[in-house]
Structures are given as C-alpha cells and as structure tokens.
Amino acid sequence: MKIALLGYGKMGQTIEKIAVSRGHEIVVVVDENTKEYDITLADVAIDFSIPSVAVNNISNCFNNNVPVVSGTTGWLADYQKMVDLCNEKNGGFIYASNYSLGVNIFFELNQHLAKMMKNLSQYNVTMEEIHHKQKLDEPSGTAITLAEGVIEHTKYNGWEVDKATEELNIPIKAIRSPEVPGTHTVDYTSEVDSIEIKHTAHNRQGFALGAVIAAEWLVGKHGVFSMRDVLGL
Ligand SMILES: NC(=O)C1=CN([C@@H]2O[C@H](COP(=O)(O)OP(=O)(O)OC[C@H]3O[C@@H](n4cnc5c(N)ncnc54)[C@H](OP(=O)(O)O)[C@@H]3O)[C@@H](O)[C@H]2O)C=CC1
Ligand SMILES: O=C(O)C1=N[C@H](C(=O)O)C[C@H](O)C1
Image (cartoon, rainbow, N blue to C red; front, side, top):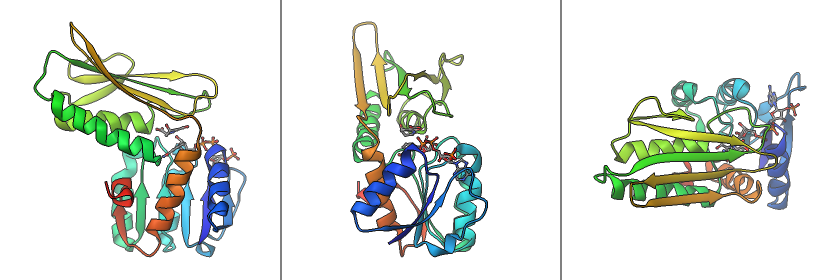
C-alpha cells in the first residue's frame, strides 16, 4: 500500500516505522514546510498534523479520490462538513480521537459503566487527561469521546475544561506534563465511595499501529467509518 503521511511529527514518524515494517511504502510526506505535493500518488492518506490544517488536508484527499485516516484532534467543529464532503465525493473516511486498541476497548468500557450508573444520581462524574506539553488542543480528543460516551447514557449534557459552571456539565481536568503520551481517567464519586477507570498509554506505538490497521482496512471502501467498524466492536 502506498501511503501519504500528512504531518510528520511525533506520530507521523512513528506511523512511518510501523507502516514500513508491515510492508507499506511511504510515497508522500507533508509537514509545515511542504509547498506542493501530489496526493494522488498514494492509495491512502494518514493525517496526524495540527488542528488548523486538518480540514484542508482531509478535503484535499476527498477532492482527489484518496481515502483518508484522520487522527488529528482539535478540529471537530468541522467534522460534519468533512462527512458531507466525503459523501458528496464518494470518498473513504475514518476519524478517531484515538486509534489504539486499548483505548477503543476503554471507550466500550466507559459506555458500559455509564449505562450502569444511569440512575445512580448520587455519583458525580469528573474526568482527567494528562498529555505532553507540546499538545495544542485541550481537552484531548479522547477525553471528548469519553465525555460523549457518558453524556449518551446519563443525566450529563455537556462538558467543560477544568471546573464545571453548569451542574450537568462534566468537568475535564487537562494536565500538561513532560513526555506523557496520554493518560485518561473517568471518575464517579459519591459521598461514600469512588469508581475510577483509567487508560495509560506507555508510548505512541498503539496509536500508530491502530492508524495503519485502519488505513489497511479503509482502502477500497467508500463511506464514513469509525474504529468500531475497523475493530468489529
Ligand atoms: N487519534 C489518535 O490516536 C492520536 C491523535 N494524535 C493527534 O495527532 C496530531 C499530531 O500529533 P503529534 O504527531 O504528536 O504532533 P507533532 O506536533 O509532533 O506533529 C505535527 C506535525 O504536523 C505538521 N504540520 C504543520 N503544518 C502542517 C501542514 N500545513 N500540513 C501537514 N502537516 C503540518 C508539523 O510540521 P513541522 O514539524 O514542520 O512543524 C508536524 O510534523 C495532534 O492533533 C494529536 O492530538 C496524537 C496521537 C494519537
Ligand atoms: O496529542 C496527543 O499526543 C494525543 N492526542 C490524542 C487526543 O487528543 O486524544 C490521542 C492521544 O491521547 C495522544
């Protein structure tokens, strides 16, 4: 498979190693300094860039009939626009806030726990995400997905960073600490006890492997998909 890497930072470089080890070829690499590139050289594009360019990168793929796996976070206000463009162009698209197998299992666990807590109004939910200091967005995309999972099944109807000013918003604490690849905690606390679920990434390999597996899965398909589709969860 010929791959275009849109974004060649911490993730782009990790993805390159895993993709090559699985027999794929990197035919396009794009970073901040790239002036022009031919996306049509690739069978699939993998975008791990920065929030301000993600929409442009993804649109360029759809406009050139190249399926795209998007891992960039912090641009989701435009997600529906990209879904519409994908459908209009009959393209192939996967966005996931987190591509690691472990986090996708954690997402399922989070939803299952939220369903069980549905009627237990004595518990208040709080979340915490910890990431390296270079991260541009907060809260993390993963924390937003976790919050959406809780909101779907409980009394909560929104989220806020740090402190919640609305009673039914989930407060998400975003901590920045050197070198942390990504740690997420969901906590239910009552007067008498707490229930906590936590995922800790030890490095970026899980994210990168998941993104390459998603790209392998997407080639030849048309439509908008998720990691649940890829992993058959
Ligand atoms: N979904 C998931 O599983 C995961 C998502 N992420 C997300 O992926 C994104 C990238 O993370 P990470 O690799 O750690 O970040 P980095 O800052 O290490 O890398 C970002 C890259 O984007 C490049 N870039 C800047 N402008 C452009 C442009 N116009 N077109 C293409 N690339 C550009 C930068 O170029 P230059 O180096 O020249 O500045 C850099 O190579 C973030 O949004 C992060 O939240 C991260 C991990 C997992
Ligand atoms: O920026 C990162 O590093 C990460 N970003 C993703 C997010 O925002 O959730 C995924 C992972 O936590 C690492």
